Image (cartoon, rainbow, N blue to C red; front, side, top):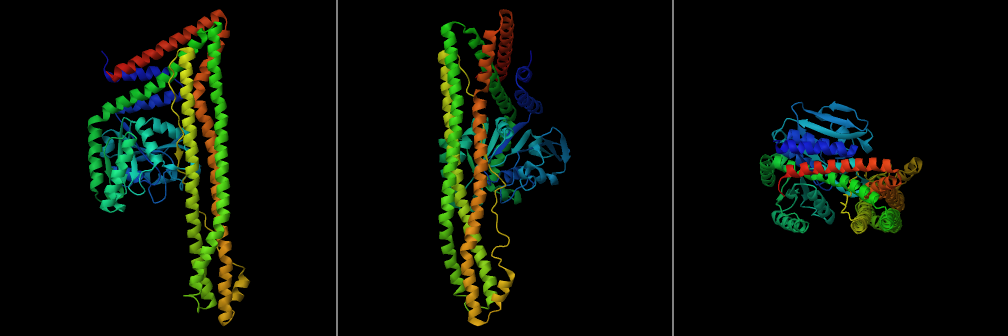
Length: 568
């Protein structure tokens, strides 16, 4: 009698023979992990939470690039291998072997801006005890910004996870978007750990308060496990008690539950694929069988409901574009108004220096030190303004994204109800992808030659004698202040306008893709059913026989998955 591993492998292989190329790729990855008994653990969270540093701490050495600014731009898998290297898979299908020192050239935005190298994925092979115990760790780009959307490949990476480590920070505290992301990650993972990183930035009472707050928020989203306050960076540099507690529990989990949870995860992922394939077959057969006038009318009504969902796709695009227009209008209004306000504030701050400490200085000294102060004040003010407006744009687009996703989920739920009412079928609602991903390219652009004036006029002004020269230098700087502020705010506005336009185009594409993903199998099934009804008797009989065989094969594969899973 075959054992559970053989039964599960048979089920996955049978399902792969019946699925699409995308299904086969996911199932092949499952089979590979099952054969190697490797649990795929995704380290997820928003940007700048210390995910790469946490993985480095688990490995006991610096392997993945990390820094103050967000760095990880592509998902990176770290797994066991005696031949230490970075394996780079490119979009054109070829692979290359590189030393670990070259890793940043492929997986970070500075090293591989906009993925101009065409990298599909990177796998790092290391000879480390945790990896040898049967774990592969996945470092993911951070979420939480709206200036670039993740690719379908990134969504597939999340769907292929077995377990997860969700990284939060004590400061800033857990946000609503993080809570929603955690719920999604936990829904796709057999086991989810939650860590509260960067706890060393707060005093002990503040850490306790942040921990209590985080536990409460996560509990509301269904996470009942422990939350580990820690400093991954301190652990990497020496020792951290919080990290040590997490590492001990995580290692114990790997040693005791890895194989069982890997099997559970494999069955769950395979069932999602099988249910979707079964829906397509059963809908085709059911719609094709309904030839009587009243039955055909019900099929027509269901097709009309499906068409309504497509119409809603256009409505959703209009909503996204409308929200973008509103945000753009608010951005331009704020730039015009705030540039004048900031100019007044900075002119006042500059005046305190000119009329105080520099009042009796030489004209050249007034210009040198005054310009340095003006530059610093202007850049700081423009950067603070940019951060504020970026947060407003992010919040606005995140809200419309959530609203559109909820709307589509509701429409697919109605479509499922229509299938049950009109066709007597219980369809599975497909998963919706498309998380927002951090865009590492967004950096503030300073003016390199800020405040430089025509050389001759400056030289003349600095040579003017006595108080006359000092007054000329002070007045020149006061005149320069509003121009510099408007220039810097204008640059920030222009960059934000570009990012908003890019984000809107990506959002529109993603909305269309979501609607297509949500209805494509159903639409294909109805088309196949229509062709079946219009076919000759002999052709219809042949196609019906093929559909029956396909359905039987799918149900046999599902039966194997159920046997492999054991009693539920």
